[in-house]
Structures are given as structure tokens and as C-alpha cells.
Image (cartoon, helix red, strand yellow):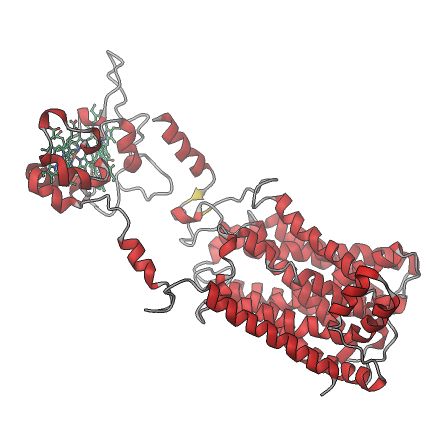
Length: 400
Length: 169
């Protein structure tokens, strides 16, 4: 008898008040936090690249190639947290071969595929084709073979052909912007459309996800850019960095305003779920929401970047501060995803109780697994930078 | 047509063709025959071994208990909730020698305190109801570790069924 009751007591010690039996255990854990986080980084990095290309912000040129490759590196891993979260990962492909329109996740498979194949890969291909043809002639052995395959054995690098590449690349970027919006808006939609969950169910969710994605993606490219120039012992292009910071500031304002609106809306409406959410926010989410996401992830970066618009300290100091701000933002957005995904499961949909979330170091859903999926994109990026170094490219003016 | 366009179109054509072929090969057998699922799943499920017989089938031989139960607090509980799956018992018990019934046909008797605790143990996550209210959608809670635990003189632990008739508590 003791055993049985011991079990019951253990389970009940996790919960406060009344929760439905299927709410005691959180089914969506840290890996599902990573999924919107990583897809967001992809969309954000891509949009930074598009700023240069479409809106002709020449000053951002030094980060154009880097942003694209960052987007690709993270895109390749974006679905991995989802798949490793599945109980039967080897059946994951079935979502693609037997899709149903009523399944939001199945359609995500196609949105993902579209974005990867038609947008990212094509744009990078058009951008690098000429260089790959040239590099194929300059290198030997396996690397040469790789360039040949990647350039699809094309050889034509006449000015006419290159101009065509440029033009098509431009068209792909134009299609790419709404596609990037779609990709990440869609991730927001997957959460926002769950009407049983008042913490998620808001039409603003896709928009909030989108802007937070831009913020995190831009911060990531900024961070990588600073670190990369340091590693390569080059001097940094401060004008470019300042411009990135400026856009980061703008997007951060929009993101902050949107999230603020969402909360104000919730507070003013004060639906029947309000009391439960209020307790959640000031209880279990207090630290991650107010400190990690709010203070460190939003307010501090906003103030710093805002100050820089009027007053610019010395380059050396500014660079260090940008590094810190970018890291803060990246951590802040991670906790934004955390607060959405984990927060949405901490309270009972009866609004009478709460459960708690414990995460282990090891195991399929532990910290280690999550960090693996965060480290792999950087390894892929290192490989991509070795294979397709943006700094070795022949300068092309994206003017058409 | 420019070279690079030609190459791209063929790569995409190969990719799409591959996808369509994979789809044909990997699509689970019988998928889509009846709807957006594997038609065979129905058959597979019907082929699963049955374990439960249902309370009605117990009536044939245990009518007295069914009648007792229908008068008491446990009237809405099915027999097999407490006694466990009883299909084999119901089908074969009268086909064997009563003197030596094989173990597989003997049903569990929930005579221990923990058996009743499954439903009656006090639990903050279940809504409490007042003593003496008759509300069959909720279950009266007691603390199994405390409620009439043992005989105060002999220190022998009571079983619930020493005082409550399980079929008519």
C-alpha cells in the first residue's frame, strides 16, 4: 500500500490546486522551446540579408553573405528538435507523404520545404554560382569536386549569365520576404490557434513571433559578425554595425510594443482566465518573464541601443557593448519562447491549479540534448563559411 | 535557354519526381482507401485480443451480486473495474472442473485497503464533497492511512471490507 500511495503523493507534490490528470506532466518541454527559437533565428537572419538586397542598404553589405549562410545553417537544424522530441522519430517523414489540410504541423512541413528549397538554397546558389565556378577551377581534389557538384556543373560565367543570376536572385529575395514572414508567422500561428489555451490563443501571436524572430535573427548575425572579425583579426566595419544596431533597435521597439499591447489587451479584457494567468505571471513565470525576457532581454538592450542613437561612445567600447546587447537579446528571446511554450502548460485549463516543470540534464528532453541542437548549427555554419567564404567572393553590386 | 536555368529545372524535376516516387513507395499500405487513414488500421484493431466481458455478461451467473450492487453506492461501477478483465473467466469458468480451477480463470479480489484507495484516497486534485451528500458524479474521500486503520485493542489492521460490503458499501 505504501508504494502505491507514495507514488500518488509524489505526483501530487508537483501540483497546486486542481489540475486535470493529463496536465500534471508537461508534454512540450525544452525541445519545443527550441523549435520556434531556431526558426525565428532563420527568418530574422534572412530578413537582415534582404534589407541589403531589396531595400538597397549597401552599408549592410559585409553581413549579407554571412546572414544568408547563418539562415541556412539554422534552417537545416530547425526541424531537428521537433523530430528528436517525437516518440517515433523514424515515422516523422509520414507527415510529408500523407499530409492533411487540417493538420497545422503537416502544412508546416511544406512551408519549411518551400522556404528551404525555393528561397534559401536558390538565393544562395544564384549568389555564389559564379564564384563556385571560379573556385572549382582554382582548387583541386575533393573541394573542386564539391564546387562542381554544387554549381551543378555549370560553366557559363559570362557577364550576361552573371547578370541573369543577379536578376533571378533578386526575384527570389522578393519572394523570400513574404516566405520568411510565412515561415515564422506560421510557427506563431501553430501556438496562437490553440483556442483552448488562453495564454497562447491570440491573433497577435504570429505577428509577435515574427518581430521577435527578426530581433533575434539580427542580434545573432550581429554577434557572429563581431566574433568572426575578431577571430579573423580584421577590423570591423563600424558603419555597418551601427546600421544593424539601428534596425535592431527599431524592430525591438515594435516587438516590445506588440507584446505590451497583447498584455494590455489581456489585462483590460480580463476574461475568466485572467486570474489564473495573473497568478502564473507573478508566480512561476516571474523570473523568466520579468527578469530574463523583460529586463535583460528587452529593456536594457532598448535603453542601450536607444542611447546610441543620440550619443555614440568610442568604437572599442561600442563594439563590446554591442556584443553584450546582442547576447542579452538572444537570451531574452529564448526566454520569450520559454515563457510561451512552458508557461502555456503550467496552469490548468480548469483555471484552478498549477503544475510544475522539472528538466533534467541528460535524457531525450534534457539540457544536453537541447544544447546539442544549439551547437550543431554553429558547426554547420563554420563548414559553410569554409566552403563558401563570403569574403572571398568577387564583389557584385546587387544593383540590377 | 541559359545553362543555369536548364540545370536548375532538371534538379527540381528530379527532386519532385523523387518525392512523388518516395510518396508512392513509403505511403503506408491501404492508406486513403476509406478516408485519410490506413484502412487496415481498423482490421488490425479488431484483431486485438479481447480482455473485458462487460458487466452484463456477469449477470448470467452472478445475478445476486449484480442485484445487490444495483441497490448500493457502487451501483454505477462495473464489475471488472474492481475484479480486473474477466472475459476468459466468463467464457470458460463453467467448462472446467470446479475442484481445480486454473489460475488464469480466477479473478482478482480487491480485498486490501490499497484497492479501495485507488478511488477513495483523499486527493486535493479531486473535488471534495460533503459527508452524506449523494452525488454520484463525485467520490467520497477518506484518508486510507487514517480512516479506521486498526483495532485499537489488538492492533490488527482492518480491511475495508471488514466493515463495508464492497458490493453494497
